[in-house]
Figure (tube, protein in one colour):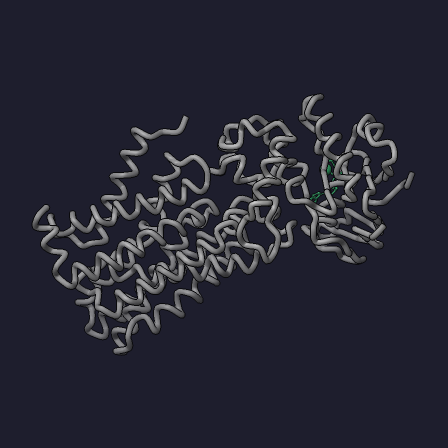
Length: 210
Length: 268
Ligand SMILES: Nc1ncnc2c1ncn2[C@@H]1O[C@H](COP(=O)(O)OP(=O)(O)OP(=O)(O)O)[C@@H](O)[C@H]1O
Ligand SMILES: [Mg+2]
């Protein structure tokens, strides 16, 4: 099984304040990793560091370039004039390819279908509810055919059925060799994929590897 | 109306129509990106730097585009760089640079005795559009539209969310540079016809109107381009009929479209 992600002795600071101190993490194909910890413990900071959005002040990060990331909070303007389909399709963009292929479009339609938002494909994102928008971001991540899927509290605000749908999708992706790193506060998430590893973090350090 | 159609046979009208139509479309299309990224003021700042360059080149007797093109591109880098570094001070940087440039331009024009050109530079003049200007406008516009088509998906992605684009491995800093250069090219290409004071309106207004009616990003881009083209033709016609500078006519037409869409086309 080839390695998808290796983070070694990573340190991240906000100004002078350390947010991650010596965190190491590896993931291979098909690995499921849950990250838990109290509010403010550094979970989102860890996912942003893996996504390459925060520079490491020390340590190293190597990972596949084929990564999809779903941030904890929506990052774009809520009022941005874009349709659901347009946003989902952006998940297929990679450096070097400028135009969407037929396959990209099919992946996008399949992802919207899987997350139950096909009916909203032509709606503007500003007209969606919070949970619907979350499904849009999940569809965007899924349709990028990632080797590493990075999810920061993806279940917050999802109804029970969508939660179940997401786990069905995740199990399918894991079976195909995608590695998934997911931040969650919910123990039942962990029960949903029992073979997953659980990493607890506290004050920017890893407490336990289970 | 017949008078207006008859006018098209005059070479200067014909040149202005071709150059202006192309510039209007690409200004509006790029304007969509600038408005959504909250860079609305940049066109304005750049155009006043363009004015200073025009005054300077005319005083020195050098073809204007040789000075205007590099200085506007340089200015656009500086302005966007400052806006990104210090979030809030971008508009202050633009205000400082543009008023200083305007003052410099006026001073140079007055001292060098080329002040008679000043009104054409500030407010635009279709008479001032030479064959070379027309071709420059056509080439620059074609380059901007071509770049926009090739980079469309990227520009959409980055305009919506820069962090997400970076997480996909996209070099967002490079696209920032591309957006700066394209904006500078549009300003340089357009400022002869609409005037340096009004080119920023040609960039911004169609996007604002289009946003009221559009559903989604692609329709926003297409509608902005179409609005701009219609406003340009109507505005040029108006400028002949009531004898006002072309730039003023185009902006009045754009403003009228904006008011009409506001009243009749509100989004739910
Ligand atoms: N942009 C920032 N600037 C300064 N400090 C920050 C910033 N973002 C996070 N922090 C700090 O870093 C620490 C870790 O934050 P982080 O967002 O990673 O926590 P988290 O584990 O994701 O919490 P939550 O469960 O609430 O999402 C917190 O103490 C927070 O105050
Ligand atoms: Mg968090």
